[in-house]
Amino acid sequence: MIRIKTQYASSRRSLAAALLLTAWLVPATPALPAVTEDQAQALGKTLTPIGAERAGNADGSIPEWTGGLPKHDMKRGENPYADDKPLFVITAQNVDKYARFLSEGHKALFRTFPDYKMLIYPSRRSASYPQWFYDATRRNATGVKLTDDGYGFCCAAQGYPFPIPGNGTEVMWNHIMRYNTKGYKGYLNSAATAADGSYVIERSYLELSYVYNNVKSTVESLGGMNLYALTKTVAPPNKAGEAHLLHVPIDRIKDQTGVWVYNASVGRARRIGEVGYDNPLYDGLMTHDQIDMFNGPLDRYTIKLLGKRDMVIPYNSYKLYDPKLKYRQIITPGHINQDLARYELHRVWVIEAEVRPGFSHRYKKRVFYVDEDSWIVHLQDIYDERDQFWRTAESHSVTFTDGPLVINGVQVHYDLQSRRYVILNLTNEERRLIEYDWEAEPGYFTPGMLKRFASSSQK
Image (tube, rainbow, N blue to C red; front, side, top):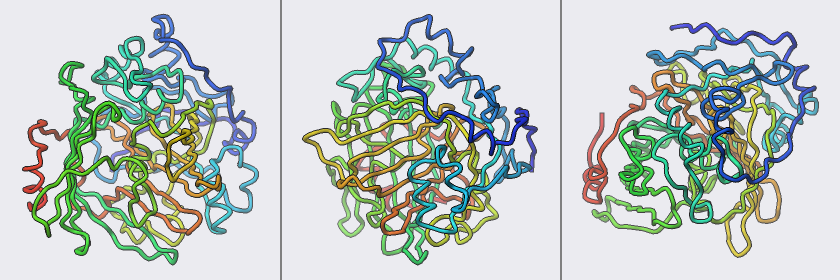
């Protein structure tokens, strides 16, 4: 295994002590007018090229960003931080000591499961992206604006649209439109657990091609589109055979999302309505708009930016991607095997979303915690229609240096009321990894292709 020497100096204090001294929330950022050129000059200087604070925090428990992991051909199973040891462990016995740095969801997991724990490691600001993506993000700082009451935005084809956000909607757009290469194809596995920990692996195959963030795209050639995708379930046998085709626009209120389904028993593709809200998935343990932590239209929620917070979140979770692991070693009763999860202290944007008057969603309130270095939603807290805490979700991200990019890979969605969870995007037992930088022209993603895609076999 290739070892990468860490770029970060160790803090002079233990992170355990630092966590207790760090302020937990800065004042909320007010809505701002368009970013000025003077403000944009901070990108690449006091701010990273995508808008995070370059400096570490006051006590050094969050280090300075110095460029992230360097680009190189990453081997499967490589863990650049394999030599790191946990600084300390949070358990049910000492959780109150660190509660200010935990989400409500993590605190609920400690209350629900006496054996739950979090291994806290040194903070490694590994996030990095291609230079052309940094350049596009810099252009967007002064050239992009929200449109259609915030349901869309104008004048960008690549890059984070709002590297210096003025409100919560702009932060959420950065998560939705982040860089994932030109596209990808391959197999992913998920498992919805029962209360006793039993589960069945569901294996899917997908082919996805991005229009936004394809280096060849222009504002004119986008045509308002974000991505195209084909996906099908291949196992277990009782679920195999159904396939979907998706045409996903950027503004999903102005432009209709195209969704087609093919069922082998019917033998034809048919178009169905929008499924990106609270339609249930995985035995009802999550909703369609929870895929990718959040992917849905923004119209049903009022979105408020609460500020920034130093917070313990899953990060650099390379152990969970190790091909030596079997799924049974990861999936354990009540929660995943926490010996394999890695948590670090990072700065996050805190976003509160509440259902708007006159609209409905089974999640009345959601709180999103968005990593400043990747704009990925790393944690989410969810409340039901009675204002009771219900569910939480976490994204165990890693930086792939081949891109380079940060991927929102393994995700765990917990239902605290039923004591069940679903884990997504497992690849440990796959013979081949997801192929990134795969792409296909829009003409490939047609209802006619959906039928052929559903019946074909991929190697």
